[in-house]
Image 1 (cartoon, rainbow, N blue to C red):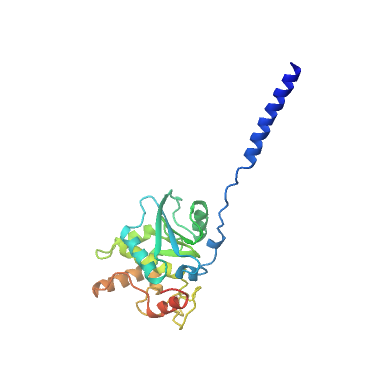
Image 2: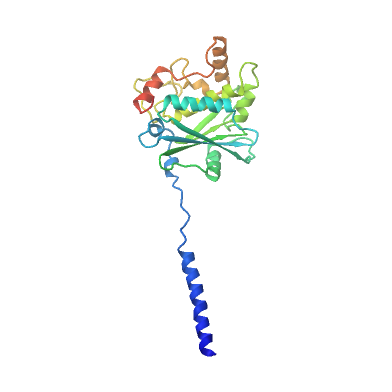
Length: 265
């Protein structure tokens, strides 16, 4: 009986040891390398514009409930990307997030919120972009002076659209829609991710506004500084309506030349 008892104990220990070994052999979770998406604004301009390293753009459109961007604006935005880059594979993934419950937002708060919630990062031939549509305005707004911010970029693949502000602004006009303001703001801010003006994409000819760094001095260009703020953008859009022009302004010749010189169209 003692012999059998000893053999049984050995068998039990073998089973336990075998299970432990199998557990230790399980592959560890793959750690996401975020470093390529945590660079300065404009640092990925060439990668966005060309197909040298990445041939696909993946747009992670994160939004607070009830502040999802319009389909019209996002379609216009994707068309803009395909017109100015060599990326013809552009995918948009929508993600609804809980509100951070802030009365206004600093860029640091936005970066922290992104760190907690962003899912998509560069992977293989795919370059990932994160766009957050916020339910709160920028902390830099000066509403009493009519200065409200519509969007901002804060990393090489990160930007925010102050959607609450966009909608309030569009609501002040019977001619301008949410989609109109969204389109112009998306395209303008992404122009900075393209590296315009002299923000990662060098100027072929000097056309930077001396009074507004990283903005264009060519009349009517998408990268004019007035598109940063509500009043300036609305004036430009209303002027275009009165002239029967396409609602969202396009890039001026100098900005297009810069993009072409850095791998874009």
